[in-house]
Structures are given as C-alpha cells and as structure tokens.
Image (cartoon, rainbow, N blue to C red; front, side, top):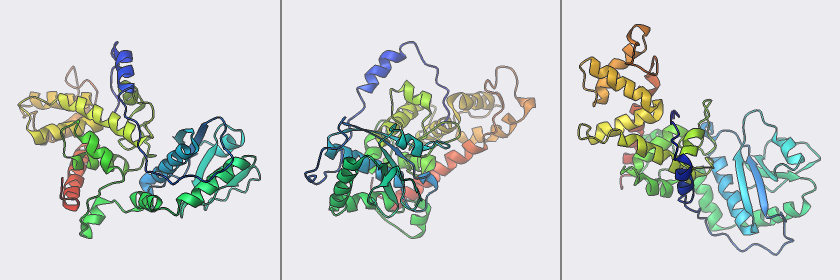
Amino acid sequence: MKDNIQTPVWRLAFTVLLFFAVPERTYISVPERPDTTYAFGDGHISCVIDTGNDMYSKTGLKAGFNYELLHMYAESAGCLVEISAARDGECYIDSLNYGTIDILVRLSADSLANPLLRKSRNVDSYCAWYLRADQTAEMKDINLWINSFTGTAEYSELQKRFYSPYDPFRRLERGTVSQTISPYDSLIKKHASRLDWDWRLLAAVIWQESRFAINSSSSRGASGLMQVMPGTAEYYGITDLLDPEQNIIAGTRHLARIQDNFDGDEFSDEERINFTLAAYNAGERRIEDCRIFAGQKDLDNTRWEDIVKVIPDMRKYSFVYGDTVRSGRFRGTETINYVSKVMEIYRAFCEICPEV
C-alpha cells in the first residue's frame, strides 16, 4: 500500500481522538494458573517473535499463534506485554542477553547453543520461547503455564485457527465449504462495516496483502495484515501495526477515506470498489493521474476498464508531460493485477464460505 498522505494541522487532535477509539483486545479464556513464585516482577514483558515471515510459510501462521499465546500468558501473569516482530539483520540473541527483551520466540529446531540462554517447553510442534539463563523463576512459571494450557480445549482451538490451510485456490480445488476464511474472521466482519463491504471482500484484500500473516512486511516499509505504511498508521492514530485489530482499523480507515473519493453517482458500486482497490495499491495521486489522462483521451474515467486501456501510454516518457501526470511515469502492471487478483480471491471466498 502506498503512503502519500499529507498531514493536516489538526492531525494531533484527530490522532488523540482516534487513539482512544481503538478497542480493547479480547482473549480466549485460560485455565487458572498454578501457584508459583511471581515472575517478571516489574509487571512488564518485552517479547520479539523471530520465526520467519509467515507469508511464505508452508507450516502455518506461527507468528500469529505465538502473538496470541504471549498475550494470554501475560494476562495470566498479571503483566503488560509488548510484542515486536523480528527485523531482518537484527541479532535478538544479543538483545536477550543484555536484558533489552525478556522473551525471544524462535523455531524450536533452531540450534542456539548458548550457555546464557534457556529454552522453554515447546509451545507447539514448531516454536519455543527463549529466556536468559538467569531468569530461573520466569522460566519455571512459563513452563508450568505451557504445560497446563496445552492440555486445554482452548489451546486446541487456537492451534486450529492458526495451523489450518487458508489458501483460497487450494481450498476451492478441493471443493472445501466452510464457515471460516481466516484466523481473524470476527475482526474482519467487525470492521468491514466501516466500508459497507461484504466482509469476504475485505478478507480477500488481507489475503492478497499478507496471506493473513501478521509479521509480513515489504521493502517499502509496509507491515502487518493490511500492509499499512508507518505514516498511514500515524495519521489514523495507530501505534502497533503488529496487533491484528489495530492493523485492520488502520487499513479500513484508509480504504474508507479513499472510497469517499469515488462516492459520486457517476460510479457504480462495482467501479467504486475497483478504483478504491487500485488507489490502495498504487496511491491516490497515481489513480487520479490515470483518470485525468483517460479523460483527455475521451475515455470514460469512471470505468476501471478504460483506465486499464491508458496505463500502457503512462509508461512512456513521450506521454508524460505538464500537469497531466503529476506523479511521473506509471507502469501500472502491479496495480492492474492487484485489482484483478483481489476480485478473483473474493469470488473464491464466496464459494468457500457461501453465507454472508
């Protein structure tokens, strides 16, 4: 998603207002924890999830699963928790050793032969939590909690949410019919209403952006379920793009603002969605350039099909001049494919999950 927002003077007051509008998280109920020595005595736990980008994983959404588990453990321990996704090139083993973070989530198959670290019980078939060797009480508490929680129905349901196959085209090939599209269906349904969209269309956008992986990121700096840019998040008062709900709030608020640009009677509902998707991918200025250019060529600039016709000319220097194309040349292939792919995914989701 492109970030080309110009911040207005009143952004600070608007940001404060939106900050208080972000809803509180809700959690699956967890069993009563065993009596143990109170761990993490300062009441705060800092964590990093370093399990690889789940967008390309064939073994499930490990980051999303551990994100929920860490929140549930912190809640049971009476602690606040701060969770970050690993960034490429960062050495979080050093961060753990120096006490900058408290818990490092890694693949349990990783070999961390370091006498300064301790590994928890495996939280599932793939991951374990690492602590410093001197965090004896904390490790004991975590292991007792893992041992207790992994035997519950809530744990089984959580595993099912994050380790089920969600690829829409593979499910379609198998003839799958299900009431579930993603691990985040309840959040998607809740916030699709902001757009007056079928929730399955919003799910299609999220699948195309991140494959439902909360730790996905792009080279341009976009991150999370809806690949929100940092400047966009700041504009909408969102502070934690790893948080699934905050990311969806930022993404849907941005989509709603874009959609307002195409709210006139000249746009059909279908075209309004096409243009909104295109602008979410390429940026509003790019799509406005396309519309101006199409109008100058006597094409209907309220029809996405006609915009697609002029995009090849917008790749050429000879056609890009003056005030017509303010943002320079536009290759546009990615955006054309993006709109087409999202709608294809949406149709697949409608077949997989026929009830609205």
